[in-house]
Image (cartoon, rainbow, N blue to C red; front, side):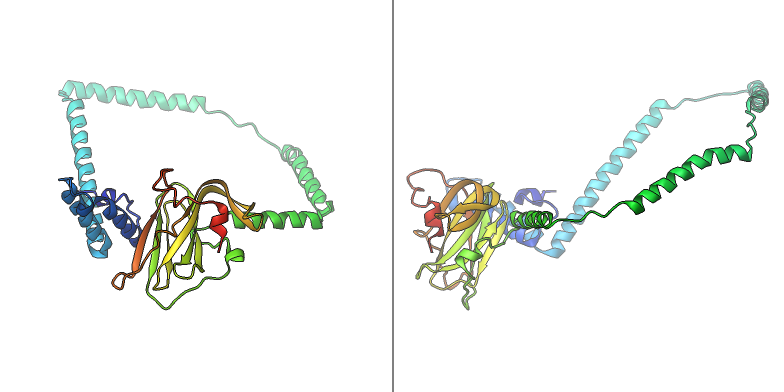
Length: 322
């Protein structure tokens, strides 16, 4: 039976969103229209489509998972039974006894048990008697030690936490909360301001296929106004919804190790990656929403430093310009 999870590059715990994202990603690469010179492209895409159709439907997915579990269990049971039978046949022996042999065994059995019980009786140790006086001598030091511990606990002065220690603890807790950003957080709300939405069904979905974390900022194509931004972890997906009919473009920064104290944009912005891999600006290639499509999928990856990609590679000044 084909492993549909492996075909889509997923695990058995994958969610519906992860299944859709994996299918869209593979369809962009392996669709027959994108591989006209590959004779195996059609067959490969049919397997991808079949895996998607089975896993995206709850009923067919449950039946598929049950079939996989039953197949694995049957194979394991058959193997175990065969091995057990082989071991039993290989080690089996036949014994033939006559009446004289049975009498001899019975005699030795009775003689062995009699001698064993006699030895056990003789070897049993005799416990020495203990007096109450010895118990008192043994327990007194323990009681005195416990009493001293209790007295020391009651007499110790409580530690008074100073104002400096409280401030340090609060600062550490605050930094820990800021550093541990989650997918979809908005670290630059203080700089860009609140989000802007429109009464439209348009959704821009960005899948981070790189091995780095990122911050993505979306702008209005017509007015260049800031719309929304979000923190995007590697191998995760985010969605920007209710976008304008006129279309949008986006900028991003990819890197590792978020540092809330690092300064950018001539020290006007606080917070960013310690290790920055690349800035990107896709203003020259905006996303235009058609009347039929209500959602656009974009893949985020590190651009190669080639002539055709240099127009998209940017810097921190360009990234923070509104």
